[in-house]
Image (tube, rainbow, N blue to C red; front, side):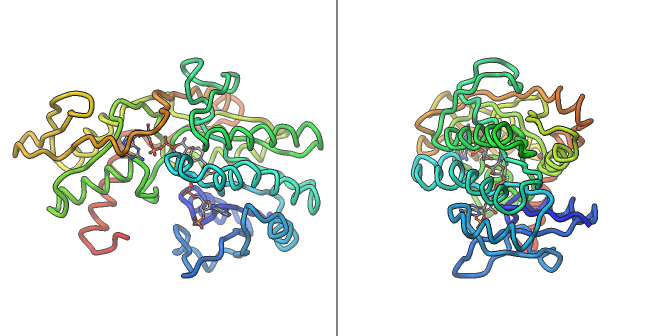
Length: 340
Ligand code: NAP
Ligand code: F7E
């Protein structure tokens, strides 16, 4: 029975990856931060199948301990301060966790079990002000947020430990991936949650920032399969995981309201743009400059050809299915008093 250690197990990807590895017969260990109220986050439903270890990415001793306890064959480093907007408010905490935290984890592996295979959760945010369209493994990086900068350190230190110490260490450069378990501060879930509330008469209007921003959105369930595939190859390498489709935030809003049977009519421009419910004439989407970022990543679109050819990875959940699943789920949660 193979053993896997997942950092960030309570998050969106951690939960889908845990389900995948449990299905494959792995013994799953997960590191969890101590909180004042115990909270298993997205793995509440499978908590009895997981071996939890209290640890923190900023505390190397706790990560060495996690390696000693788990004796993991595979380590998936998914833990991060992952919300880009917060990285301007907490740049140092973001760097401690997302940058130095990676070195902490690599050192723990090197010290306890250097033959363990390592996956690093790199990100399309490293491309930032894009130097090429679409972005692939060879595209130069230009991060645009403290989050992107910290993740770029994590990316390079992973490559450096692979080259310096011959560790089996891979980075997955994953483009945006969402799901029913996405945190509500991220734009997709913020939209689908608001669509459910507006549909059920519990909210009047959704306020958003930059509607023109373009993202390459897939489903997390597809993306965790790529993480596992990367650690099953003969040689460690880095891969872009994306859908090769890009859409604006405005297009996501249209698609989400459509799933709830509401058609939007857009009026105005810039910060004065708003969306009306075509049927009722009521304004249900507004722009609020409070949600703009100090520096924006205007467009992301990834080329997953290398992953498709070498790993045999394919995305299975389409954009429309992703949006529909998220909207349906939020309507279900709200209708049944289950939303958090
Ligand atoms: P998420 O839902 O925000 O989960 C982040 C996880 O990290 C949570 O379990 C959180 O634990 C944990 N964590 C945060 N700080 C920690 C610390 N100091 N020590 C230990 N654990 C800590 O993120 P996600 O969407 O699943 O993303 C997984 C990873 O992929 C992240 O590294 C993210 O940056 C990266 N990524 C995500 C995307 C995407 O579109 N989703 C794309 C590219 C890369 P708590 O429950 O205690 O907060
Ligand atoms: O923003 C725009 C915002 O916060 C997407 C993380 O998983 O993916 C994620 O980072 C876009 C941005 O995700 C609102 O300005 C407009 O252009 O959903 P987001 P993100 O910043 O792309 C990458 C790949 C990661 O690695 C990260 O961990 O949407 N936007 N209006 C808004 N965004 C938010 N959050 N809220 C708004 O009201």
